Image 1 (cartoon, rainbow, N blue to C red):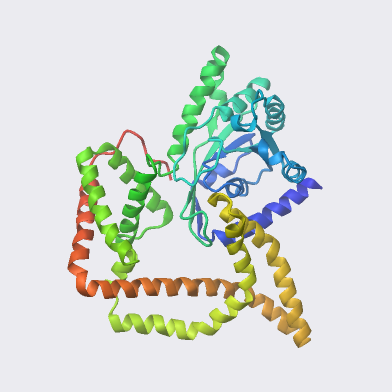
Image 2 (image 1 turned 90 degrees about the horizontal axis):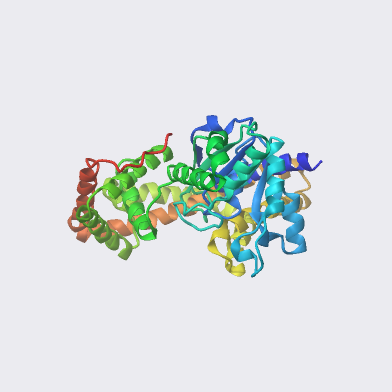
Amino acid sequence: MRYYFYKFARQIVRLFLAIFYPNTRITNRQYLDFKNPTIIVSNHPNTLLDPLNTASRIKQHSFFLANASLFKSAIGNWFFSTFYCVPIERPKDRGGRKMSNADSFAKCDEHLSNGGTLYIAPQGYSQIKRRIDEIKTGTARIALSAENSSEWKLGLEILPFGLNYESPRFFRTDLLINTGKPILVANYKEAYEKDPYQTAKALTRDLQVAMELLLPDTKDDEEDAFVKQLEDIQQTELPVDMGAAFQRSKKMIQRLHATDIGFYTKLKTATESYRKELVSKKIDDNAVMKSISFDNIGFHIKYIGFFVLGFPFFLYGAINHILLAGIPAILPKIMKLYPGYDSNIKVLSGMLLWPILYGVQGKLVHSLTGAWLITLLYLITLYPLGVFAWKYKEQVKEFLKINRAIRFLKTKKTFLLEKRTAVLQLLAELSQHPLSAKPSSEN
């Protein structure tokens, strides 16, 4: 019974992930169709949604390795035990006593030996980053222990994922899930029999490299902010899909790491100079280029016509979703948790509120009209017009940015475009530089 409940819950999770991240692309889907026992791993920028965004993509029933601190309360222990979580202690969880994960490792051995699938976040904590920090050896030790206890006959694989969120905390943003080539644990048999400790470290290093290939892998937050600015300019100049944009960015970062410090500084200075002008006027590169391409009169006719004609539909969608959109949006501010939990709270509260509020609203409409047909039509229109209301709001924000850019460029067009051109020229020069030693991820 619990297994069928898990399958039902997975479908519900997939539905809400599709609503929250509707533009999701998965590379190398052929690796998702596996039959051997498997440990799936990913970077961990988005707390509880990371295991859901990976485990929900596979057919197998997955267990999850979870922080032991989540099991401390009676409710937490019931919830995480019910949903197939295995507690694992971290050094900061032990409270001064000796850390012991023998029972947890034994459960993992048993689960994998029976052909199961296990999710692990190998860096051991969640942080909103587009790179993977140093991976702990726990994943390798669990994998090697399971194979060794089964006399190396399991065929156990480690399947790495790279979760590339456009903006993990916000509704309807892009998500690129890079799937890496599985690592066959049995390949480490000979080394493990000679030195288990060093073999665990070697497998961890190989896993680190495999996961770095699936992410932008910038050096630090400062470089990541710099790279994001370059990515925005490149995407405005030459729009491509998520997969191609990732490959382009990956090669750009490799070239940045291979170039000399003088060129790196020159490009960063030029980019920062352009960015400061955009920030000062509350615009972005996309707004600048659209303000140039649009005829001023035609631009206003297009947008204002859309706003006027679309306003009744916006109003309908917004009013009917004021609670469903408003409560999940305000909850993270009230709870004041780590920002990485924002999207989790929004998705989970939305999952709970959606059937309740739609049900209450449908019942209210039926009580007012007494007609089931009208009630059905009302319920059918709710979601699409709710999405339209969100898109309408985003169009208003874009219109205001473009309008600010038009006003700014009336007096500073040459000045601003010269700064942008300087960045593009340096990017063109960078594209001729050799790549660093690290290869790009396969697509």
